Image 1 (cartoon, rainbow, N blue to C red):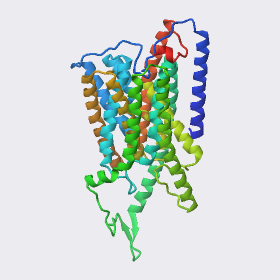
Image 2 (cartoon, rainbow, N blue to C red):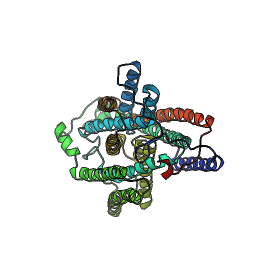
Image 3 (cartoon, rainbow, N blue to C red):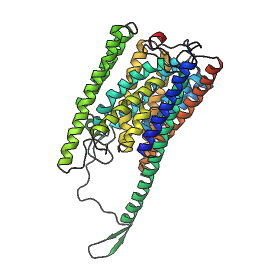
Image 4 (cartoon, one colour):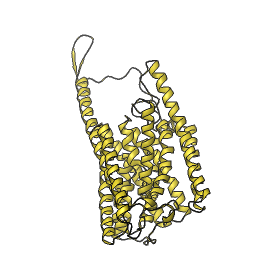
Length: 459
């Protein structure tokens, strides 16, 4: 599947789904309005809260195992794992959908934070640059957070079945594209390993004699950095402060907006203030990438200041902005961190898997923690379960990174990360698809409204 074919698939699938929803809106207006299964801008839902007690049982053990594996593989792939956590929390433990979405954010935040901490102590595999690509983080983080607020608003308007269909289309598309990308990388790695094996097997000395299995030490040995040196090198405080400023700005706007009457003038003023904040940070970084790209091309330097190998033209920058908003919108709709778009996107634009995974989890740490703080202020999840599941995710994120890095060092194949990414997205498509189809069938049997809902009237 080529990049153009993937885009055509996504656009056509989304268009057909939305047209079907518009048709059902006209034909089913005599049915009662159904309640949204996802949080609105105030964090409210149409279901009563269902908070099971935290006690030892087979359900808790099974959920712990699934949560641990989902967090471990999700953070390695850079996708978080929200598409697995929400069905697990609702079907196995028995939480209502609103609480499951909130707890899912807690798990994503914990796994992302531990994964970032692990990656900060890991050097870049090929260059003398930080493992986290701060240029791409500054480019995508504001648009991702903006998309999350848009997705939360759309979750009130979109019918549940439409969210399910869009999820299946998007997840299957990104999973397939990531799988094909992984197979391409696997073939390239196989060819490279064969060439390296040939070079190491035969060498000729200065006398023309053939030497077998000869190893040569470099004239100047590479200086090994201590973990603390690597940590300090990977931390770029000016960039981190900018990201923190965006995070705090969005948080303050969300907290203030929660105390304002829905659809009032001040509500829309606060909602619209998010756009200039995101656009200013995105535009500054986009202009910087564009100018640097033009300067390097004019001097004949093919390298880039960031890991992406694409040309930073106006069209590509616009494409990245749309993908960032799309990823955040999906995260707002499903209670995920937006990594299901960001992870595959970074791989697609030429970022190596190790840096793509580290950068995606770094960005998700900001987006998920924003939601966690807001949900905590709104008291949308039980504290004991949140602490327990977050602890499980923290351990899973750290050990997942540790074991996969060791496996990569043994096999010398970075494509393992891409296959994990594809597998987690496909598993999320199955779980979210099965749960969504089941609930949609029940709604059809109950003759519930299957079209778009009004935003203000559904709060």
